[in-house]
Image (tube, rainbow, N blue to C red):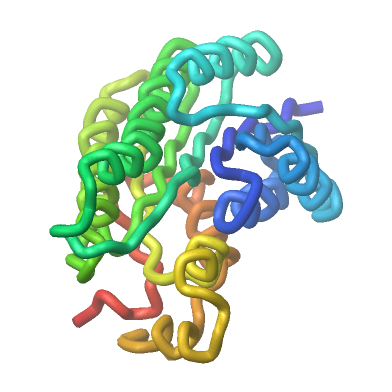
Length: 252
């Protein structure tokens, strides 16, 4: 029996991360789901199993290099490699730049950028050392490509993730076999990140639809489908790209 492909998904306890774990499990990946909350992690594992897949949960701080080093060693020991890494963990806040404190900026930068830097570093290292033709998908944002009012910290962080992914793609392409790295740049997606910041109301839904060419509210599963494409062999010629999934919001 062929051993299953292994995928590490951070931020897997909610939103896009959980949807991605469930979606790519349907493609035959065994999921290593990572997050801070064991109870929510258990719920993700249950969702993966209900979808016909397999998963384990690792309580994990994406901003701690010691956690990344331990996870890389553990997965290599248990599975010999991993084939895909999807960095979904991240945060968000909206505040005018003159009112944004340096501490607020640094906290978001640590969560949104340094976690992806660490994940990409250890993902590349494991894939290089195990000679795995892997794929790394870094969830960025449309805000990493265009400017949004009152979101300077978030835009700066996601722009860094987008460009970091391009640099990593150039380095990974030189490996034998090559490792692909891409960023995935969602528009406004209806998740806890939005409802927790703005609430769950018709007014918020109207805001989400404003400027959306397709006039539909994006869901976590829409991003999970894109992540599955980038993580799998169908995208074997795709690296260094920023894949925008935004319903056409950024087209103008």
